[in-house]
View 1 (cartoon, rainbow over the protein chains, first blue to last red):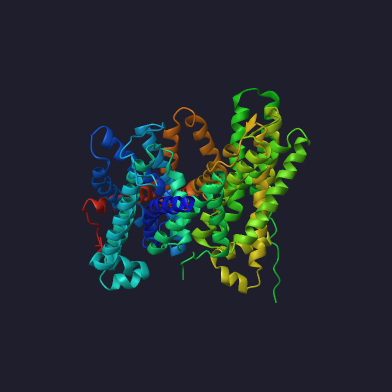
View 2 (view 1 turned 90 degrees about the horizontal axis):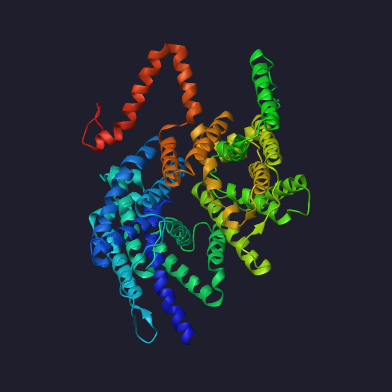
Amino acid sequence: MVALRDIVIAGLLLGGLYALVSVGMALQYGVARVLNVAHGEFIMVGAFLTFSLHINGHMNPLVTMAITGPTMFVIGFVLHKTLYRRLMKTAPNLEVFEGKSLLASFGLYYVVQNVARMIWGADIDGYTYLVSTVTAARIPLNRLVALAFVVGLSALFYVFLYLTRLGKAIRASAQDPTTAGMMGVNTDNVLAICFGIGLAMAAWSGSLLSIVYQSITTSMGLPYTVYAMIVVVLGGLGSITGALAGGMILGFVATIVQYFKPSLVMIAFYAIFVLLLIVRPKGLLGK
Amino acid sequence: MKTYKRTSIKFTPATYCVSAFLLAAVVFLAVFPVWYEGYWTTKLTEIMKFVTLSVAWVVFSAPTGYMSLATAAFFGVGFYLASALSGTVPFLAIIVIAGAAAFILALIVGALTLRLRGVYFCIFTFGLVLLISNVVRELERTLSGTRGRFVDTQPIEVVYWAVLGVCVLCILAAWLIRRSRHGLALTSIGQYEEAAAHSGINVVRTKVLVFAVSAIFMGMVGAVIATRRAYVDPTVAFHLDQSFLPVLMALFGGMLTLVGPVIGAVVFSLIKEELATKWPEMFQVIFGAILIFSILFLQNGIVGVAQQMWRLYRREGFTGIARAVDRGLRRGFAPAWRMLGGRRGGGDASA
């Protein structure tokens, strides 16, 4: 029973992280139709921004999130306005745009990762914050705080998407950009905002990851890109609720496999990914 | 009813010149290591490896528009087989076995996944590379208790000739496929898959077959290159750069002709040779920036640009080229200009 309790708790904590890591990618693909393979790199940048602000600026890691998110939002907004918008205007149809934007994100992946490496080096960095454990299950406090933030951010995001005017515009653009445009939605801005929010989500999850794992490197991004891709495919490409659910599922899968045979975790991930794409490419929750 | 007739090659002075030039180039490359001893043999080996990979990639992905990132999987299978078999069978047999293994793997993968379209196919192939790499690592760890393998190295000249052979074979095959019925079928699939199916093309068979044939050369070149290293592990064998670099080279060179990927591969291998060891980060930043630039501005790669320039020069002389460059620059900077609050003539209401 103790094992089961530990698995459930660890699964929840890990699943929450995976969900936050993936929500940004799901939003970017769902609305802006950009499958951003540089997602993990922006997570890495978020983690390093927090690290730098904490070490050099002596800021509380949780407070740095007030800086990392908005900074990345601006970067994402500008990126979409310059790079992806141009691709969208020149592509003859959606499929071509998706292919081209995917390749462009591969270019971004190389640029972002290596610029970061020039700034922060290739070594492992890290700091400790809130490392004590609480309750009988010995839950690390930093993970608990991270989970609280995940839940909070997801709730906030949901409220934004479903109760605000801009959120409505985003959902409309996701369903049918042409009609949304005719109803007076400035789709160009909406898509850029979505891309920016995706990047802000990536930066926030990076900040939380740096608190939880205490060690960060400039090459940490790619695994998270892959996790996010698996989660996004699991939940149905582009579905926000799907991504939240998929993150939880993946977290539990990882914890269970970890419990029985730790070396098989990565294989289990990729096997799920590949099998899912063969059997049910629409995702578990896809229509 | 008109039957489909094979287009025959017209023997004009131009084709004679081109074939004579190509033959001379191949002969020159073949005898090169006999009288030359030095670093260029290694450099040329690397260049020809990438020429093979990007030409093989273009054979399938350019006409169909299916972005395959599985190059590293096929390359890695050949690479790893060569290390596993090294010392037991002759070098030539290893190359053939590696090609066959990549072919079979591509048949299976293709049959399973080529009904996926667009990004799905792309991320599937991406995941496939990671899956195979992890499975191989786990198998090595549990079954043979190692993290990698030692390889019997071959002398550089032998590797050079082997790569040259595979490279020539690959370009020849690519050229033949393009000219064949399958090539035409592939192009029509890329343009409109349903229409192609309705006009009697066996869509699935054509796609899977060409995909698998292109994988043969990736596997073969992997097996050859493996013998350049003394030690091989799954991380090296299935490195994702093997998937990305050929795509970049083909995009940069241009995918409408076979000259494009060759030029792209030559240019990039040279840049890589020069920069990768001295400033690895700088190289990768340049690499990513050029990738983005090519996608944004070079529709048909530098070969396309060269063709367009040539046409302009024939029609209007140097002034035509100057005007086109000016126009291109203005159009290129327009988004940045608009972001800064500038307005273009004509007025874009949503900007």
